[in-house]
Length: 327
Image (tube, rainbow, N blue to C red; front, side, top):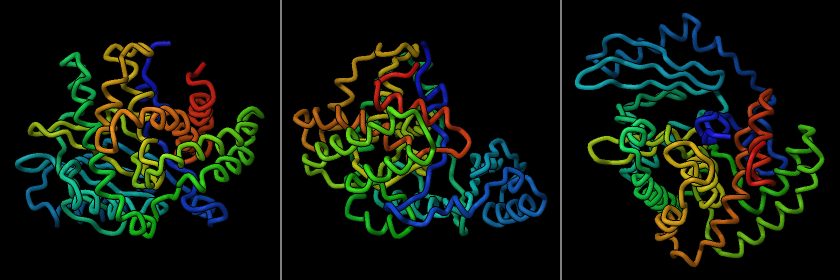
């Protein structure tokens, strides 16, 4: 098999199962996504009117991305394009989280304006995916991973604020029960149900390292990182959750970097990238914790990123958790 997990679509652009602790209300149980919501005339007219109020130089407005949970519009403007994003009701927290993260770090961009579930964002530059393809090198990931660690450490004191905004709570003390409930409800293969004990074991081992929970992007791949004016910018925090920070390595390192520039599985030495990320947390002594997180992180991703009706993507994440590879 030759394709990175991110480019195969197995780690990206998913919507999560319900936020919160075991027993918390499920907002998706009472919310029905309609992709047509974003193309109905009333929405389009209202959105474009608001955009033009915020961006006096706005020219043509197009709608290149329409998904059941969100839509994105591109706004021609001077001196560069502007991007509009609208979120489904269960993800109303994303504009506020994006604003908070941008106030704490210059490694993401602050919204130009927000309104409830809408936000306008400046252009972030060129995607890392295209930059890597041109440069034939993954070296930029060293700075990206260091930047992610910096963001996570700065956000840690604000976890309660983020939880109050509605960011899903996938902390290690809750994850085993969430996993058990999830696999039982969705009737996956019995071996995934039987793995509940393994989730408990790995969560306990990882907790033993004493690293506090923080914001975890949960979708950090080369389509979410941009290069602008020499800076690497981490964008799109809509899949985030509060959990162990090292879970970010599951998608970024196992699902993306390890595949190298030619999308060949395990063709890149991941050691330097782990070291770049771990340096701010305490260095190479935490490699064993990172190894646990790169495995258990896929269980978190399966729970947090499940899309109703799209069981195949979830199954592939569960396979990454149990087997370390997909069929």
